[in-house]
Image (cartoon, rainbow, N blue to C red):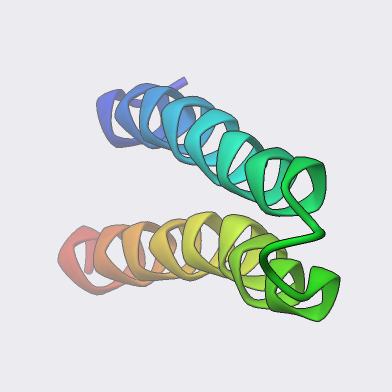
Length: 65
């Protein structure tokens, strides 16, 4: 496993935990905040690590040649 993949894994784990806490807090206090507002943090909780991996992979492919 390359260094950038290890760093990506660490970043992704932290990102997902923080996004999950955000979603859970929105759902827990649903009487004050609409539960539909939990969709954006859930989306970004998955999209940002995927985009970061794609950028890392692209960087690796471009610098390998």
